[in-house]
Length: 535
Image (cartoon, rainbow, N blue to C red; front, side, top):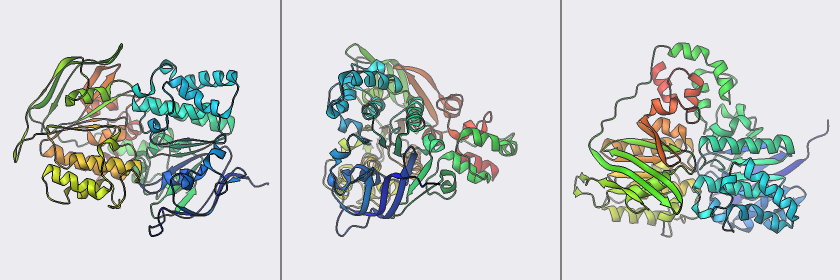
């Protein structure tokens, strides 16, 4: 039988970003044939984005660094060719879609890449229409890119690359800002490209629960420079990062490990029997008085109503998740609650919160989706020291918090040079250093691995224990299952649900976490709940 010729071939590749720095990747051998869907996984900051950057020469031609070994894509070596030489073959979607936009509107952005490749106008027109329908963004055709939500921007960025028709598609966290339904649509579109057109897809993703079942191959980037690849179910048995479904399979002793809800439900009968008659132990949160009260809050941008007469209360010590589809008004609501964002009508009342040293002069802290906007100094350590001084806390407080969220970040590194997840962890640490009375977080788990998200849950729970009210806008249902006491769901700018987490998300086909889907009709949300019950 003839061997399969790889479309991507990395032979003994090592990468370091400075002569004295440790290698980000070490002696990597990776061969990917045409028409495979490859998922790249690993801890935050382990080198996944660097590995993707090698595939079209952005590393080292654009990002810098020293590369040894050979990277061959098709018939071209990246050492001998610039990234522009791969433009027609390799389409890349980065973690920050807004940074890659070059036009003003959605339709113009979809057409731009094809214009640069010199495609005929009739072909461009057809592909634009197909892409708008494929990703469900036809209603955004004439919208300004900067008025879109983060998730909508991400779908447009993916569409702009897809429309150009590359044979290799490189996606860095493609579903991180997408709601569950939109993520399923995007992944389904990518799978169709692989199965029907033979496109090769290499996708780095932290939310493995969304993509692992579709993967032909899993590439694990360990963080010490080593990279291994193989069958997803086999590697997941001992992988350092694993979705809740795999964690549940490990706990139950299932072999082989199921990677889909369907396969897990087939194996879960004995586990459901063992859990029958029990329920998750979820202590009632000790909440206090209202710290923020919003009454009939409305936010409009021209003719578009982003938030429509929403009423909301946040109480001392409460952990609330704000969910909803992309563009449902979550970010607009957060900004309106701070008093800094647009508010067309309605009112927001904030009660002064007294801590140990008197009234808090910064009652509300917000970490926006573009968390890097909060960082302005030259090194990670300088950001941490500035946060300590500004909040008048003991030296090292911010750094200790950062190490809990994303350990191992070099203090001398520039905040713009670390990974997206590490940059987010730094922004979170800076904002949480002073333990403000109300914390609003907009998509705080983008770029964070499962361990970092668990650490974030712990940090936020500690803040809630001392009386901080927490409101987190997120699409990450697994994070919500571990973090939230209460869930609020927006749709079309209106509040459509508000209640206990187990009641709101377990009953939702879109927002139910993996454990809930596997063990339905029993109401279990997390592996920790199941483990505690079995113990």
